Image 1 (cartoon, chains in turn green, purple):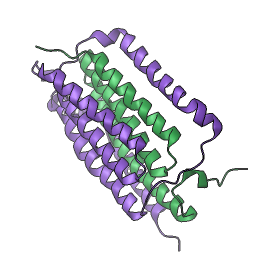
Image 2 (image 1 turned 180 degrees about the vertical axis):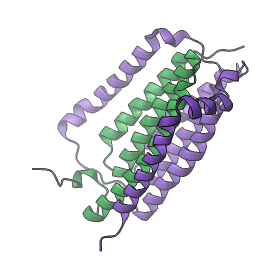
Image 3 (image 1 turned 60 degrees about the vertical axis):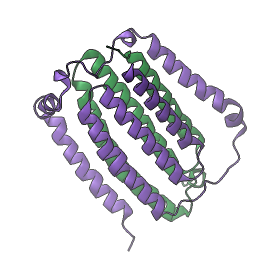
Length: 102
Length: 168
């Protein structure tokens, strides 16, 4: 019986999360930034499931369920905001969104 | 041996998808890469023995959320990303700092005590992780948060409607 250590999953989760951070920092397209945030949420979900399996407790899975629900709600509201900003600014570039800039 | 091979294939695909999400200049390519990441994560959830989460991952994430993303990309006719001048600081320090963050998190996680524990969902007894047990936990111990999420969804729905509506 082969056994995959939890650390493998955790490292994969960390790598995905780090790539999500890189996406948020480097990308200039508001939709791609939003997708990078979804990537980070997915990475955290993977860590949750791996920890749930390591402790053999269900609570981690329940948390993943809630994270997915909140992410779906966030996607709906966030994309509505994206549509509104794009209609106002005629651009998807976040550097054009400078309403609050002094 | 098969779980290991499956894990490494899916991990490779997930990282590949994440990198191509960042590298792609077209938002639609990024969206499809994200679907690849989500699909391989679903396989990893199956490998961990969390079959309900895997199903939800495919139905809600790869299905509903990504369709929403692709729909908005189509709606806004999002083409190639504008290339902007990086600030000097981002050019010099960006990648080193990002890779440092990544390595630091990975190092801490791999060193933690829990890391050596076996995470095996394939083949071993799966009784504690069944969908039945999960729904029991969801509807008994976590009933109040579960009901609260329905209110959250309702508020998100109303918020999205109000935000996206045309101004009179």
